[in-house]
Length: 257
Ligand SMILES: [Zn+2]
Image (cartoon, rainbow, N blue to C red; front, top):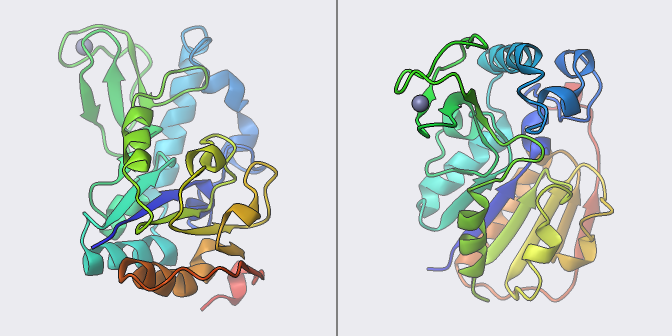
């Protein structure tokens, strides 16, 4: 059986109340993200950065997986995790909490802390971590949230590229809730001949819809009922339609059932 590789981004969790880094509102308006999440200046902004990530973790505690997270978990359960490979740019745990397994978190995991000296990584749940609290394994103070900061290497990218390189023409690829700006999705699917599906709130300058067989410009929660059967059909070996299909629609969250 073929496989589907699904890359998700901030658009997936936005409907769970986790704003994208560039969104206005709440936590994100009170901090300069370039200041608190920048590897080059992390040490000099340490107190403020820890405060930001502590608040972000506490926001995650009250967030709930939405219908799109749940639909992906159902699809993965139905087809098996070896056939539905989930890669996410999101540092939240909403896919995992919805019941998804083996999720590749390429930008880290908000619930975890990491030690830069001994490489120990540990889960602190949704709690706080004080700026100068030492590593529980080696007592070093070189601790940071296990989240890839701006100007920091993303070690899981190698695994992401390995997954992408393993795609064959029988497989399927979907990009959900991502503009293709941070992770260069357009370049990654160059030459891939299998079925390609895109869902984003609106067209993005970084991700040409014409690269895809199906484009949905709407919230992911709204598009999943159409995307799920497309992925199932692709996995079942049904032929790829040569006609590009684009659908646009936006229903305010308040009108969703
Ligand atoms: Zn350590």
